[in-house]
Image (tube, rainbow, N blue to C red; front, side, top):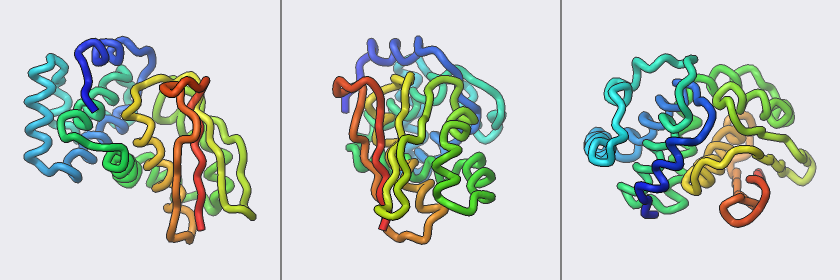
Length: 203
C-alpha cells in the first residue's frame, strides 16, 4: 500500500474531529506491532513528510476526551501501514489491538451484558470517538449468529476499512463467549458503494 503526498493532503483536509483517545490507541497499537524501534521509524517518516506533531512524541499525555482534527488520528495509521508494508490482515490485526487498548471501550463494554445491547448502541459508541460519520445497526440475528453494521458519511482512507473490521471483531469477542468471530467489509465507498457495511459473524 503506497501513499502519495496528494492523498495525505486530502486526508488532512477532511472535516471532523477525533477524540484524543483514538490517537493514543493508534500510537499504542503501533508500539505493540512494531515495538519502540517502529515508533521511531514512524516519527522519522512523519517528519520527512511534514506531518509530525509534537503530541505524538509523548502520546500518553494527550487529553483523552479532548477533540482533535480528524487527521491527527488517521495520518499515523495510514503512514504506518505504508511504512511497514502492512497488508489487509495486518491492518485488521492493528484494529484488534486498537480496540483492546481503548480506554473508552473498556469502560463502555464493561457494563454491557449482551451482544445485542452492544449492537444497538453502536451509533452512540461511534459518536464518543468521532464527530463525523454515522454507524448504524442494520440487522442483528442472534439465532444465525451474525450482525450487520453500516457506516455512512465517513470517507477516511482505504487503510481504515480493514482496521474497523478488526475493531468490530475484537469488540464482539469482548462480550460473547464465542471463540471465533469474523468480520468482513461487504460494501465500501472505495469500491463504488454508497457506504461502508460490515458483516460480523460468531460461532
